Image (cartoon, rainbow, N blue to C red; front, top):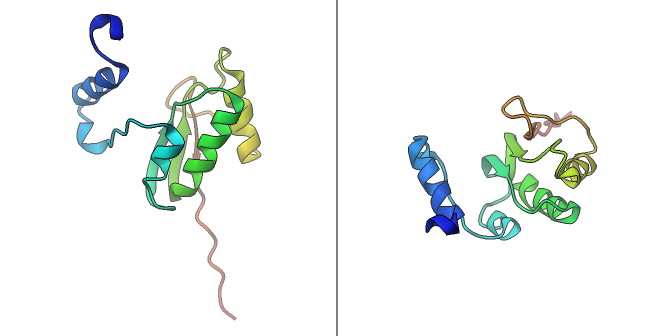
Length: 123
């Protein structure tokens, strides 16, 4: 992108406009875990992670974003099952204690819906 006189952020902003979703997206230019702190726990309907791809970075992102997703909300990410990024899949599996979280929306995406917390009935 820089060779073309722009940045990846500029390209992303143009893509959001061209796709007609700019009104529905909050673009935050910051490290993923710092950006997560801008949102209260349980306040997000959907978050998509495509940040660091090493094992520890993915775990840090998941730990930062998962508490911010509200029950019924979705946390998703990129480069899952991508042979070029095996640590992404391993970290997702280890964090959630589950395997095969493939998303139907893309060949290398993963997603998980946060289950609602069961309500305990008073006796």
